[in-house]
Image (cartoon, rainbow, N blue to C red; front, side, top):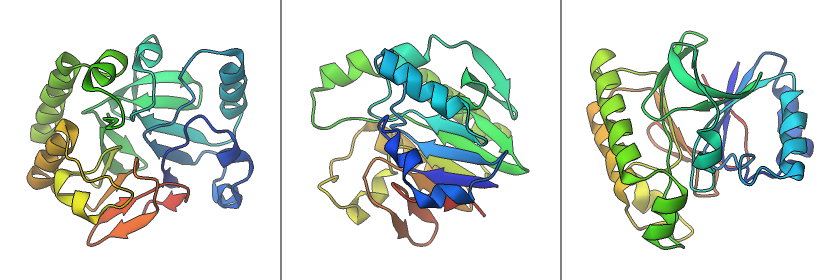
Length: 221
């Protein structure tokens, strides 16, 4: 089975004390919609958390968000996984690369992570997280893959929301950034069953087929 959840920010407590995690069995996959947060500063404490997660019976895949350190993530080599390119963090933890398509349990997923933190300056965002050149490369990759798949997917996973969904959000997330606009283009040019995204620290369904995830572990079906 496949489950989806939202921001974890490197807090192991989400895995230690969330009773809904019990329904995730051996061999299942948990997808985190950005801000996984366990690759941040390469500290001893962080290493211990990753080691604990690497011993879990289930697998974890994540897209990057506003608070994932891409300088650390990109040190891991690119490998192939379920038909797309990933970076293996450990035997059961993989980073899903922007614009890649994965065939997981006979379901086709399009991944497009990336996040913009409106609370800090643009210079900080561009210096710490993916820069404009990297985003152009990701756009080229997603266009190529959308054309290859005729724009048809079962599920789309992102951190940010498509721009047209921002009026449905709360907590003051109303500003539209470049990633929101890219995702809006993807939304209007693709057919899909459901779209999962995180960032906004809410668990909320937005009809007809959008799922904002945070603390809950939502089963994909």
